[in-house]
Amino acid sequence: MIDNSAPGWINGLMDTLGAPGAGIAVALENLFPPLPSEVILPLAGFASSTGRMNLLAALLWTTAGSVAGALALYWIGALLGRDRTVAVAARLPLLKVADIERTEAWFGRHGAKAVFFGRMIPIFRSLISVPAGVERMPLPLFLVLTALGSAIWNTVFVLAGYALGERWEDVTGYVSAYSKVVLIAAVLAVIGFAAVRLLRPGAGSRRGRTP
Image (cartoon, rainbow, N blue to C red):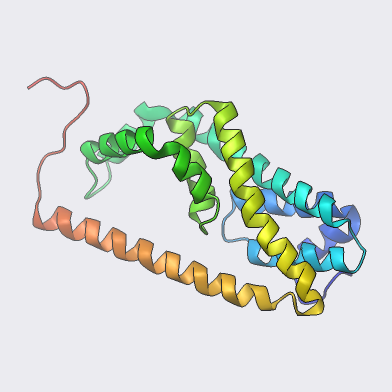
């Protein structure tokens, strides 16, 4: 086994498949954000430091896994489409169709940056693929931005695990703290949004509706 302190299924994939197993684990992490990328990436680096897998292969396969997981979420967004998204939004409390329209406009202006930098933000690195699919961002652009952003994120943590060796778990503490800060910021943003909606209620607008 690579390391008994890691979840068994991750060890099993890496023991059996090597670097491709690390890629599969990362792809699953993209689809199910609660899965521990902060464990997968440095563990892959540690495995490379012991010679159980090639370092370059670990970097390439984990990045490929990130792209594969993101692509699956992109197509979910594309299949969902704008009309279904708006229909769902119209039924949610405190959310207006006008909010969706503003989000669309924002994504149209900043979508490329959101996809690139979003790959380096916990939780959002998975979720950002869905609006990219809903908005039908050109697929080649989406793939390039996702690959570049993922390569940066993955390389940092794989190399950290490689450098730390048996102390690879030290990386998880820093990532956990970073993730908590991001989550707290997101919760505060949601609370602020809800407060504004409750204090300033009003009817949302719908695209294409005539006065």
